[in-house]
Image 1 (cartoon, rainbow over the protein chains, first blue to last red):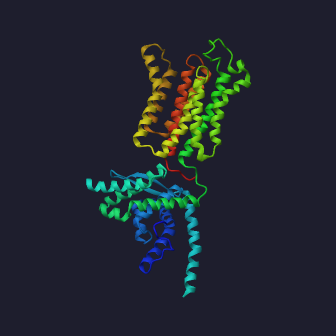
Image 2 (image 1 turned 90 degrees about the vertical axis):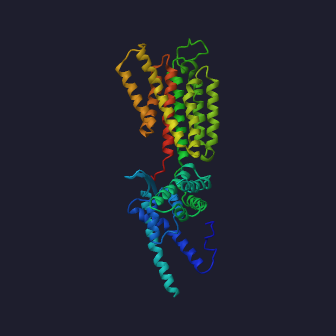
Image 3 (image 1 turned 135 degrees about the vertical axis):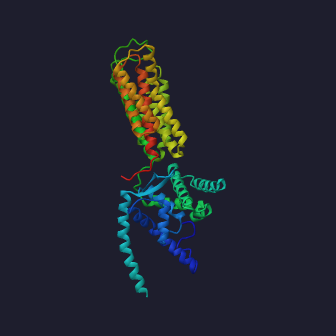
Length: 124
Length: 314
């Protein structure tokens, strides 16, 4: 937001490409996190790596602020889980509110993406 | 290893500092999120430099949370009230109920308890003064109710003002009935203090001290009773022993920080208040005070306990 990544601040070439990707990821990251957590709870590093491997998350540093906001909004909850080892892990799990939010995301995504695809096709 | 830890600690401290102004429980949760990530990443074989570089500058993480947070707050108008507000509401409502109960108690149930006129009065306050004048005993309840009518943002200041007023009233009338308002005064102040502490964030040590002191206060009358039994001043009755064992169990649960322990403490406090109301006698003020103290201990801990858990969606 205030870090200069707004769509208005356009650079050129690869720089612009990065910004477009960052902005798009930012818009869908919450939905992607919910979709991953809907399959089962995960700890933060696991979530970051899975999103990273799918090219969906810019950095771990942007994942945690998002997770915190989602927790504040009651979409996810955190709990400490003691492993067989000595240390405990912090797990993130989807809440019923998060499941509802995911359904809204999926519905919206399915409405928007065909429209964007059609628009791009018309441009050609 | 110390150098490694230093880098991580510095990162987390910067994050914590940059999040100043965020509610304490949320701030701690964000720091705990990032700390857990760092610990896991280090365990998976990454170096401190790699992990911290992956996260990006702590200021940016904080700023992103602050940005997201503000946006989120604007987007959703139906946020549940935050935990300190809920704690304040619980304690203020309890103070109101207790203030009404106290008024009923001193007006209708208590047989002429005044130390100022030689104590020769035998009727209740209502019989002595008439029901109209005895409605004055409801003044503290009215004051406490005022706090609940004030809009949430200004409720903190109103809470302090009313707690101070109720304290002054109780002290000014302490020669007669004011002392019976002690428990109300206690709850009115807790309704101000607990939310403030929750906003600041309670350290683990502070919580532990609270629990231990609370358990000791619970045990105090029991220890006194047991000493009377041992010295033979009091005859051992099975019921008395049963109560002592029950209080001991609740005190242990309280010290362990169990929610049930807090709940049972509240129930014990209410039971003691009820006992004072029906039993009367010389010990009435003592029973009333300990009942109020236990009730406040239980409710205060309940409010703080529920307030420090992440909010669950309905």
